[in-house]
Image 1: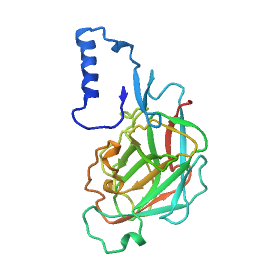
Image 2: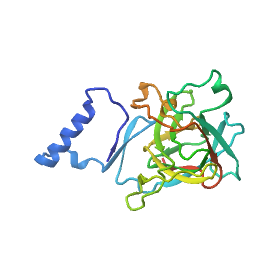
Image 3: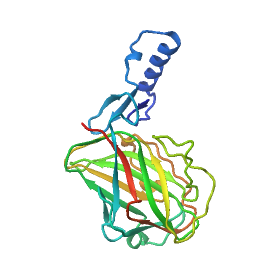
Image 4: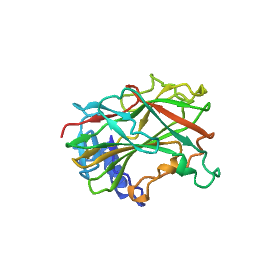
Length: 266
């Protein structure tokens, strides 16, 4: 298993050479050192180098839950905390892509929620990333996009992970799910407007090293185009025809509203 740094410039020499070495070893029996490679190789953001492991999730790593916690008004920057909050909620407006809105709309209605964890000690995360949300909507369906990033002590932003879910297609397929990925059934179950329900979905793995002064930032919205980053981050983004309706989405805080990562001791 290889988790490489995101880059899509052509020609992608790294992957061409990787494939050449792999097939030379597997098909031709070439003694080119490929058999001595670690079973898992992952690019560690923050150290800008590959690390090796025997399994994924990495043996000895531990799941860590960071709970979403309100920072006040919806448009404020909220918090990621290690202990679940007693309650609270925040909302955002879901506007279908391409539909016109009145001038000044963004000044009175936020289309995104942002959460941050300020890092006070050295930490390394390498493993699956998943979101677990208590969610309600005033419509029968909506759309959720989550983006995780590292903000360096110098203010630079580094995109780590992306994930998305359609709340009406939320049933977890336990037979096909693994320790690395939550698999969802595509069967539709319309939401009951205003009634909270539980959502769980996977984000892309995001190995990273955090140092004191860094921040871990989570953004939640309903449109992928609002969470785009420039091409310097190496990710390819596509505008999705979602959400399906104008709606107001709400996250309800508590023990069932969190992000889960796997921590590896340095």
